[in-house]
Structure formats: C-alpha cells, structure tokens
Image (cartoon, rainbow, N blue to C red):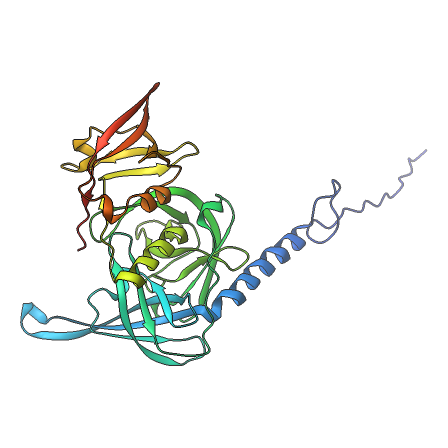
Length: 330
C-alpha cells in the first residue's frame, strides 16, 4: 500500500508588520516611531537654525599682501531679540559676518563675545519675527538617547542627521590649546559647516552645541553641553568676555564629584599638589558634583584668592589649599 501524504499549511507571522509571538512591537512600528521623533524634533528646532557666512582678512600667497577669505558655519537663535549662539572658531577674527535665516532673510551680525576656551561665541542680528530655540538641560541626558543635529555642512542648508548620545564626560582640546571638559560624544554625523549648530533631544530642546569631528574616524563627533554654553553665553552678553579663574586640570563628572584625569604643568593645581585620580567633592565649602558646578563656583573674584579643595584620595578625605589663576583670554 502506498503511503498517503497530507499537505500541511504553516502560516508564519510577518516579521515586519504583524504581531510577534511575544507581543513585542513590530519593526515597522518602531521605525515609524523613530522617524516621527526625528521629524518632530527637526520641525521644532529648524526655524531657529541659521547659516553663518563670514569674511576674514588673511595673508596673501607666499605671505605677501592681504586678501579676504570666505568661511562659514552654523548657529541658532536663542533669544527673541536676536542673540545667536555658535562656535568661537566659526566667527573668531571675522571681518564681516552675515546670518541667513531659514526663511531666506539675510542680516549683518556683530560679535558680542567669544570664548575660545569653550569654543562658544555669541553674535547678534537686528531682526524681528525670530523663533528662539528652547534650551534643554545637558545634566539630564544619558548615553543611548536620541540626538538630532541640524546645520549647514558644506553650505547645504538645514541638513538633518540623527543618532544617539554615544558617551558623556569626554575631554576635547580647544583651538586655544586648553581642554574642554564634560563634552558630549554623539554619532549623529557632523561635517565642516555643522560647527555651531544645535544638537537636540527628541523634544527639540538644545542639549549641545556641535563643535568638532575626528576626521580619520566615522561616527565620532562632539558637542559642548548646553549648560556650559548657557553660562558662557550669559557672561559674554553681560561683559563681552570671560575673565576666568582656573585650576589647570582636566576632569570628568562622576556621581560623587569630579574625577581628576590630568594636571597642567605650572598650574595652580600642580602647585596645590592635586593628583590624577583624586576626586574633587567640595570647593569653598560647597558641594561639587560636576564640572559645571565648579565653573559656577570658580568666578573671577577667586583669582589670586586662596580657597580649599576638598578631595578624596584613596581612602582619605583631604583639604588642599589652592590659589586659582587667571585663564588666558586668548
């Protein structure tokens, strides 16, 4: 007797659109949610983003004569009366600055102040009908969260890239030669011309000011935390510059204080015998939980005035007398 075979039909749930066996959200729905978040953040921040076109007088060929060179970058409006935040390296030593808004309007701009140590600058335009960006809180961000960058790379206006916050607490050497601490690392793609543009979260709030890339790498880009940028911008608007006290160490935020990563030679930190691996927890009797906390406590009135750093070194809690110096404004 010949065996009989029964045809059995198996239905496999669609891996992209149908429900999964464990009740997980389908891939298509996840992608739609991600796209919706990027679109919403972009729509919220886009009216605030500007293109910055600069002219700079430089030496001519062979060092003879002078000529006018052209450059540019990005920025974003952060007040209704025309203040624009960008990078110091975008506008430093510019002879002429023109700002182009998203609606195509063009305005001359003047430098209010720039701080090369944090790579933050403030310029101002005289215009109405502006849409200031909503500034977020960089203390609340976490690695892995959505990050959206918008700017004008290579002159392509309103270019959007998206990724995540890759890491926090990085250190980056500015063009002044000093380290910028607590920098945000992101894989949202940045290119020349993105400098000075905003890095935003899923709510369209600015969490950082895009500043640098590593040319030989892919997906390693950096932004100045917006909390640092807000402090610097406020000082630039009030005084035109920052007269800044400094200790001369590089550090990284931790949950308990600032971890010392390096000491500058000849600095107040070296004179005070601060060491790599020390954990700074208090200054002038006040708790220090972040680099931003220390920046707020370390004012120009502290220059040349002895204070005490409270640190944890190994299993010991120590107080180190220290005399802050004045950071070179150049």
